[in-house]
Length: 564
Ligand code: ATP
Ligand code: MG
Image 1 (cartoon, rainbow, N blue to C red):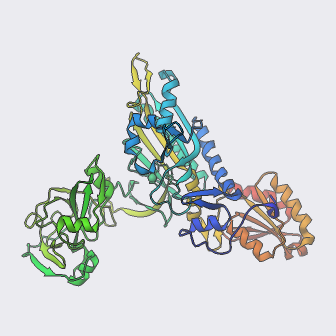
Image 2 (image 1 turned 90 degrees about the vertical axis):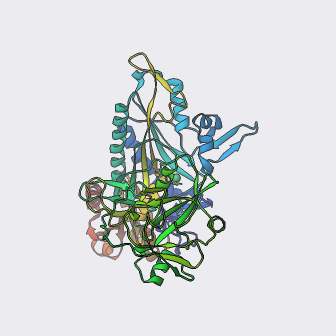
Image 3 (image 1 turned 180 degrees about the vertical axis):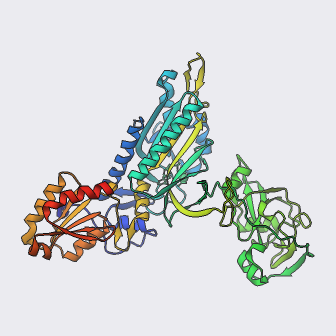
């Protein structure tokens, strides 16, 4: 490609609409443009990177014996009614009617459609195992689309589905996909970790997420350096490594705490560590029942654990006006003593002596509260997020924590879809049985954003070789060496994706753009070339510069590629 002909509208300034590095750089490098909230155009450079990622995914999926299909994004309501997800899925499922008044939705995922496809035509154990996949558009009406294509409403996903005759078969398919994911993310040049995960709206029992490690990630992962245990903190059991001192119970005392609301403010006001303060939060179940959740001030409620405690119920935090009506005091002054609600207390408060609770009266707290003496909990359970100081649930070593971006998620579904949809096959023993299923997603467009979060510097993107839209950029700084540059461009284009910067621009502009769009190898024909006939090769990632004759370039690039 010649840059003078290319549609790569780079921007010098950070666009105001973007908060994260990857969003900024994708816009600045002219790779994407916003059409509507969470809905993006991919420009040529963005699409080229996306296609490279798809290529890695497709190659590895095919290698694993999975077969590619393509399913519609428009899906009839009837299929979703068969599994009950038409009602259960919530507002992320965009529903609409056609001109004949039939209900449809835009596919946020394709379990129903694939199960329908397979039940129609797969009849015997002889046809199993079967793994089908597609790389296609998904639509999820996300409540807060953000960070550009990282959390979009319309995005590209690779979704795969396995069908087996029995659970052992599912284990094999699942392990095969796990290994395939490891190869895919490795081939994309990403640093990542696989962790045990929560199954969410897709369902099933066992699941793993693949996380690209980046400080800006929305997820927190807990892992053990000793035994290798790793999980999303949504799932990590919180096992405290702290031993509470045995301290006599002191008399409960009501204290005036004017204007202090957060646990930290109360702690500062009373001159106590924040761990000695408790927060009591009010949640509303199924829009009718209120429950109180009591937890240490330095801990955070894990809402996934809360959902599991009240399965099948909708849960949300109560609003300030609701709290005032239900408790008769403002948030910040709520406590479990005398509260006429179901009280859930976090396990970390067990055996914890003399802590602070809200008095259910504005501007007052109690100090020296003790569970059992001053209030009786209905449920004592692990309801918090694991945090530094907690121990590995497998081996007891202190856990480490790191942030990540979820780029892949695999699930053992079992019969969650095949049973309600009556997707059956004839087994060896002559009996009809439901397929044992798994499903496996990769956020293809999210990988592009995650790659940039992980690989950038102050000058722009640093694409890993494998998914760089262009691997090599050739720049000449004077018109009289144009022909030599052209020759190099032609020669290297035989094996690699090369862009020749033939624009009538200042060298500074050309260098800035090459860095911004993240081209891994830059070949520069400048003053040195005029003097010695040697080109300069700049490695984007390390900023190393090497000099060589044009006929040494091919060998050099081959070596660089092998090491990438
Ligand atoms: P998240 O927790 O980030 O919402 P999810 O658990 O809803 O993800 P899955 O249903 O497992 O995601 O979808 C498979 C993959 O699709 C995810 O691992 C992620 O990489 C990608 N993905 C999910 N939602 C989005 C989105 N809104 N924008 C871009 N990619 C997404
Ligand atoms: Mg989601």
